[in-house]
Amino acid sequence: MSAAAAKVQAAGEAQLPERTPKRAALASWVGSALEYYDFAVYGTAAALVLNTLFFPEETSPGVAVLLAMGTVGVAYIVRPFGALIMGPLADRLGRRFVLMLTLFMMGGATFAIGFLPTYEDVGFLAPALLVLCRIIQGLSASGEQASAISVSLEHSDDDRRALTSSWTLHGTQAGTLLATGIFIPLTAFLNDEQLYSWGWRIPFWISAVVVVVAWLIRRHLEEPPSFEARRRETVALTPLKQTLRFHWRAVLRVTACALINTINIYITVWAISFATNGHGLDRSTMLWVPVLANLLALVAIPLAGNLADRIGRKKVFITGALGSAVFVYPYLYFIAQGNVVALFICGVLMSGAMYSAANAVWPSFYAEQFPTRVRATGLALGTQLGFALSGGLVPVVATLLAGDEQTNWFPPAVFATVICVVVALTAMTAKETYAATLDEVDDMHTTDAERAALAGHR
Image (cartoon, rainbow, N blue to C red; front, top):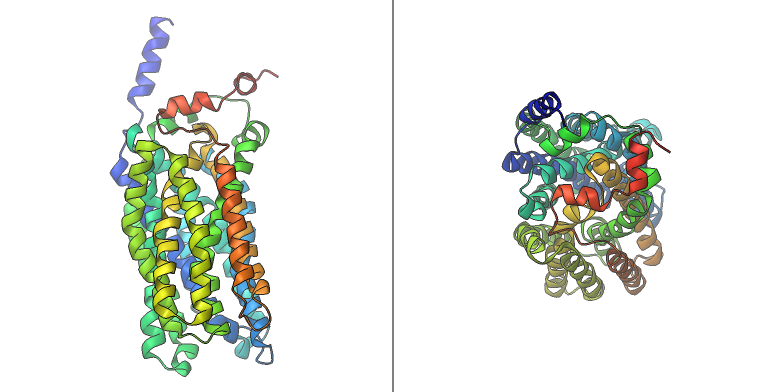
């Protein structure tokens, strides 16, 4: 390299932003808390009140629940389409750009739901507007998590990437905890008339506060230096083309592993409906299960992230997936039996310990299956396809398996177990990356054919 070229390169490197792992982790945490506060508020409301408010009175309880679960799934179904837009935007225009965009999309849609008219007010326009808001939420979520994980991973020190990126999922648990916790006093202290007339709207309006806090934190966040270095390089392929041409196997692997989200859907959405509508358990009592599970998760997630930095991503992730498969049986069985103490213990262990182990590790585990240049695109496509399948189909399939009276527990348990086993087997096929630097991860996942294509050679 000539002296002039070396000088230009050194100047470019000198202008790269510094790593700020704590700020990146905080910005990712608060945004994820908002995203999943909004998602959990809707899922909880769908299980408790929306099936009554947004559909005709003459609809049978089972069909109304099925329709409400279907609106939960709408946001998941549109997420892969959003990933095709948001992922490449994050890899071309920057992680921060997408993080600010998704912040206001999600917050605005959730706030708007709190003002929607009900079926009694405007007929079928009510569920139509509800679905529209869910679509906006789904498009937002498709880019938020991939960008937040990418920015926290790339700002992190190499020996703490799993721990640093796990704070993104720590935020999701905190947001879910806040959402579920808000409904507990509403269901406990408001009568049905108050809850169904105005009380259900309050959790949706509170999202505006979280948006303001997240904006104040994120506006000072800089792009990661490794991403900035790659973005300055001239390449012949767009992030989407590069991902689909050279990294489609990794996208499919992440899609299959992301089905672990089934356990989250069970604990936060479907099981609440199963317990209250099928077995007559108290609504506020069932809401305490995800609350306690998420309290445990707040401790378990950073511990699992730290462990994954020491022994590897795959071991921790697979243990969490298989452990979830074990605990889903007693959890659903004790719901059917009406044994509140036992269902609490099993539900908290299933979600707060086992699922949280997998949940803590997947940000680094999935993201490190892609090189920096296409990390947000590959991560968004893989996760959102998996989340669409789990979030869109699982509530509906589990509801159908539970029967017309919503009382059968064993078929939904088998369904969850099969998914967890598929997740674990798929994870075994991935490369272990915990001992590699991000530059080494880039080299690990970039073939000679891809390098030639990036340079403009066929």
